[in-house]
Length: 197
Image (cartoon, rainbow, N blue to C red; front, side):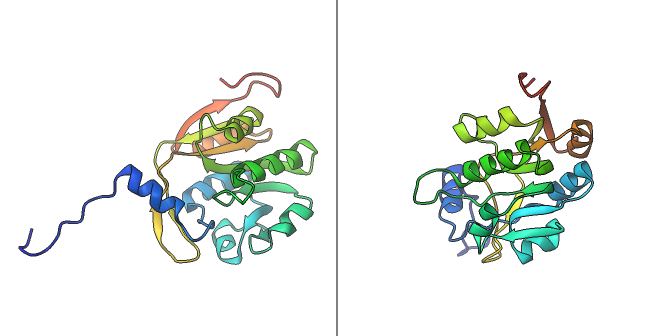
């Protein structure tokens, strides 16, 4: 080290978590390798209900609903093959945004509006919304690495202090597993009423 310069220390987990939570934006872009795997697993993406024009350049959904107009996503029927990376944070109700969006995804899927879906969220084991989403999934990949995300508002790149997961809803679990096989470990549903193994 050159005299008079400071060595930059890596942030602790606690500091990273505080930085992530202080973000001025709930909009963090989906990592391209994760979206690419979802696109391969489902054969394309028809809808991203929580997106923006900038984010959709990478997601390449046929249609998207903008996070600038969140009511549009909740007032519209969802359809086809869905990619969902819900916004982070908690609205004033104190309920997790991810949980609100995951429940809506499940409703659209269970009513037959969505053909297949990939839900990209933190691996929040023990959180009620995450456990509920996992219990409904046909398969799930718990990612080995902490992916890098880009904040679409200020361009910062960062890592979530928590692990990430991709939950799959649909009939093509073998395609999902093949597409995500290099990215993490899996939990699969035996049937809709069965247990995850």
